[in-house]
Every structure is written in structure tokens, then in C-alpha cells.
Length: 78
Image 1 (tube, rainbow, N blue to C red):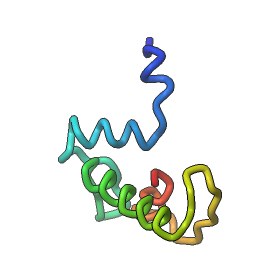
Image 2: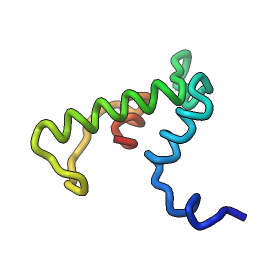
Image 3: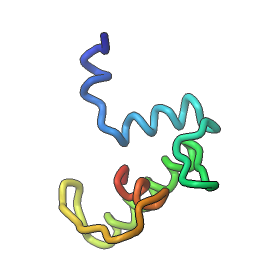
């Protein structure tokens, strides 16, 4: 059974934890392309920082229009 701290973690926190523990582990694969946990964490952090720099605040809602794939997943975790 999972402890309460693990149950309360967000997806972003879980990805960050995996990026620190298994940085070279395969996080996603879309066709022939893949990304590691460290790569996914870096991509989602970059997107989050860009959104904050544009004036958005945590909790604000946005609409994302893109193809399903690695980039869409990174946006989701941002």
C-alpha cells in the first residue's frame, strides 16, 4: 500500500522524482521517438516557465492545440 505522501503527489512531482532517480530511464515512446525521465522533466519545466513568463499563474487554465505525442505530454506535465 502507498503511504499518504506518495498518494498526494502530483504527476509533475512523480515525473520529477523519477527524473532524479532514473534520469536515463525511458519515460515515453511515440513511434520511433522516445524521451527519458530527465528529458520529459526538462521539457515540462521549460514549458511551465514560459507560461509563467507570459503572465499566467499556477492554477490558470489554458487550451492546448497540438498533435498527440511527446510534446503534448510535456505540456500536460507543465
